[in-house]
Image (cartoon, rainbow, N blue to C red; front, side, top):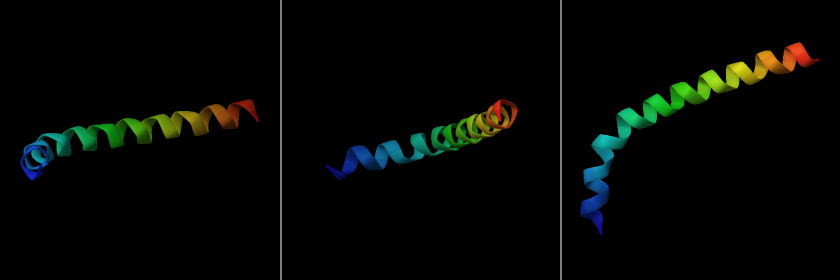
Amino acid sequence: MESPSDIQVPVSLPCLSYMLEDLNFLMNMMKIIEIRCL
């Protein structure tokens, strides 16, 4: 059971950082939209 997760970790780390950047971008967009709507 441990082997698959060990294999996934190196691959998922860069993907996770990309996802975090996208999430940060989306959050900033939401803030801008909220400010404009208010």
